[in-house]
Image (tube, rainbow, N blue to C red; front, side, top):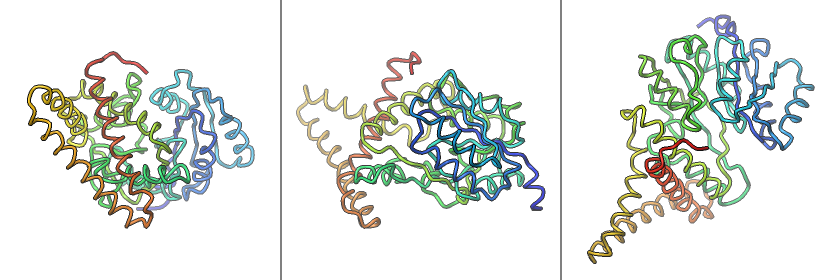
Length: 338
């Protein structure tokens, strides 16, 4: 494909942001290193009123790198989908690339994304998350490893796959602006799962979501179990809100955690009346714990870091139970809350 055709596309990188002082400079430096020409790039950051100095970091970085256009705008609604929509409205590029303030795209990220779009591989294209710990601590390392393992995340290929192909969703997608005329903007009534819902509308309109493992970005996982639990509870809660609109989009990886939790609750209640049900409950929990321990041993050997032997099972269990609890809570309490 002619290089001048690829590089002629003006690209707008949109970034939702709130209190990202610790990581926003990593994103900006990664964008500055892009192989795509600076004159064809603009970065639009929609900030939700950061109170930790994030805006000062952005403005200071911008003053030292005037050759990369940075727009810092206000996201008064302070949600991720509203930030994305505000950034899109303030942008002017033919191609939109969605990133997060705690991500680091590979230096060829934009180049490869635009190439895939021009080649017609998909209406929205994305790639692999290289998941890394956000802190130098054994639990943070355990969480990062767990968040990239199929037992923890099922068939979410963008977390571990090296095979290109059509998928149901990608993180940090890139798409042509004119796609929005067909499918609309991000849904601001969903405070999570907005990317998945957006990709669902693309697929329902006849479009394709394309996964390319050569499009890579670093993603920093949560650093402790409390933050991880909060994140996955939110994922589960808003997943059900989305499934109420698109029930046919559920995947097995999304159904298992709430089914598993429901089974445990039912068995626990049945043991009050049927004694042998307690043995069934113990057998299921024993099998589950055994699977987690075997996986953690394999990962500890692979990474040569045996401190994660205890951390990986705790992280995966936190992901499963928090996601499942959020999902079930959303079914029982369908009102939309932040």
